[in-house]
Length: 324
Image 1 (spheres, rainbow, N blue to C red):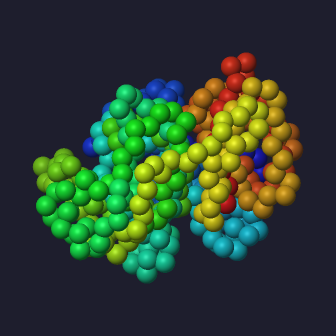
Image 2 (tube, rainbow, N blue to C red; image 1 turned 180 degrees about the horizontal axis):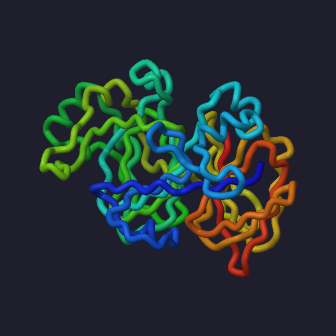
């Protein structure tokens, strides 16, 4: 086994822009790309290995082949052949819908799938770019239905202007949305279950208003989820990991590396995903496998990897590290 890269899965959307293709230095011309799914085991959108002897295998086939050596023993017991995380780049040229995700229990009951706890790391933000997360004040389920019906729901949703480096954790049950001009990395549970609450009265390509999921969302929302600012507070540091989010669903850290740095995974019983959003580096694992990683690229380190040496280019490299 070795560090795995995957073919990106580009998703065209009504609200997508032109940043992802350029950011990833891709040669094809694709318009309105809202998302690039970097690592995905979602049915119908499975990542395919792009390098090495396992090139061409889907992520699920990779898990079937290597089992706990890829996922880690505890993860394999917990998730079986299902890969538990989905990683995306998201380019919001226009506002995304205001939505909510169910927790694992509700999602399994309704859809036979995982729920969705997720986080955003802001890579780029135009002037005035915002994220929506949580409520300004506690509301009742009855008030929710009234506000959705009369078009005033946004009046009670918390909105924060954001800048590059901002982090927002979005637990299942939290009302949220990504504002126009925001470019983020999204790390989430492997799930495509989303309940759309409000979509700015947009119409799809056939001229129809996009479907809302008012009743489904009603049972999923945490109506007590109130706060002034849901952004994660952290202190940026050079050449050492900075913990951003630690949950039962994933743990994510930030690396800003300007000199050789060794990541020690000898005590970690999990795969590791490294997401590069600035600069470039070479990664050399304990078996001697060397992999280049540049801005817009993502790599999956199997759980069997015990350590990785990060050799940054002269300009340095910035990475997100996430695992379960």
